[in-house]
Image (cartoon, protein in one colour):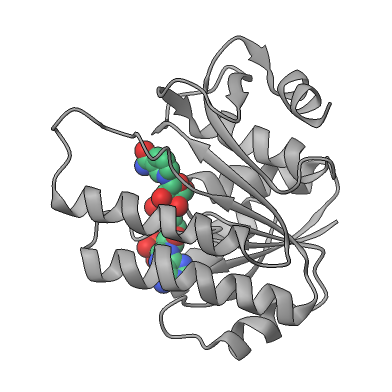
Amino acid sequence: MKVFQIGAAGGVGRRLTQLLTARGDSVTGMHRGPDQGESVREAGGTPVIGDLIGDSVDDLVQKMQGHDAVVFSAGAHGTGMDKTTLIDGKGLQKAADAAALAGVTRFVLVSVFPDALRGGEAGEGFEHYIKVKKSADVYLTRTGLDWLIVRPGTLLDTPGSGRVTAGQAVEYGDVHRDDVAAFIDAALHEPRLSHLIVELTSGDTPVADAVARLAA
Ligand SMILES: NC(=O)c1ccc[n+]([C@@H]2O[C@H](COP(=O)([O-])OP(=O)(O)OC[C@H]3O[C@@H](n4cnc5c(N)ncnc54)[C@H](OP(=O)(O)O)[C@@H]3O)[C@@H](O)[C@H]2O)c1
């Protein structure tokens, strides 16, 4: 499979590139900073510079053409509400429109639990982020793409266990970036995981079994 990753130099993106290329997929890793190309290459991908804010839909179409799938794990990462709107919101819309125009129908979006950090500790910027991510989910579900939305819990950098809880509605919790990447790697190669929103936390089920259960 030829996979186009947006956000390839990020925490989930780098881990996913490693898994995909280890199984023999070819990955084009879109990154924004010129200095991030080396990290994409080290993970096994072919770097391509791109910016969800500066690039037009046509620019993205050119980059995506010839791929079999897009994985979107980019994010503004708390750099401001305007950036959240432009990257997590409008950026996702541009990427989905570009994928459709490029004929790349399989599209996996890394989203977020709508109930993340409930209970008063979230500030205005976080509330905005949650709203923008939800609207991005809505946008993607209304496209004609072969979409899959993965909503991970709070991401952890510590080593994953390879075990998760995954379902259409699960209780909110943490999840290791390693395990998010492992889930997407497996889910991307399971065509029955389509037109589905999956919530994902750490758990007891091996990733392959979790994907097989959802597919069944
Ligand atoms: N943090 C959490 O607990 C949490 C929980 C649930 C879901 N999520 C979601 O999980 C996803 C992946 O998380 P992560 O840990 O991999 O995030 P990350 O490490 O911040 O990676 C995001 C990547 O997106 C890139 N990016 C930002 N703006 C861009 C633009 N305009 N054009 C192209 N690329 C751009 C970043 O590049 P730069 O280095 O240039 O900024 C970065 O490499 C995000 O969508 C996030 O919303 C996060």
